[in-house]
Image 1 (tube, helix red, strand yellow):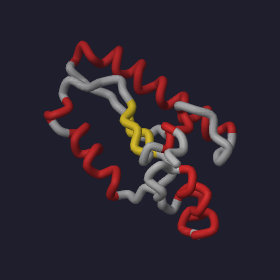
Image 2 (cartoon, one colour; image 1 turned 180 degrees about the vertical axis):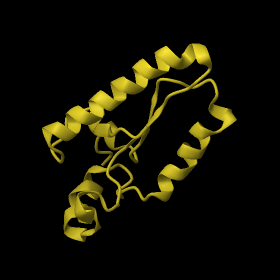
Image 3 (cartoon, one colour; image 1 turned 120 degrees about the vertical axis):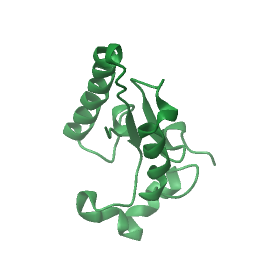
Image 4 (cartoon, one colour; image 1 turned 60 degrees about the vertical axis):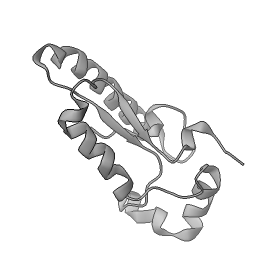
Length: 116
């Protein structure tokens, strides 16, 4: 499942319905993981921060819109879809067979706060 860092903290860049939906999805992951664990079924989520995608009409493709996000990220960049691939493949693989009910945050350290 895909949640968001908006499920973990308040956000000024997203609206209340989005944050509530992602928080609900995060709780669904935990509840489903609890209920399905007895069947050896794992349920996890990827919680991305700001990524350059077509979501919201691709607004983060605009350098002027992207700039404040980059400044507030410790890595000073936004994520690209390729940044999620490794974690998605890991969670779908047998290597993650004992991981369930968690969200893997992929945000370049954004939830940590500004680094400089």
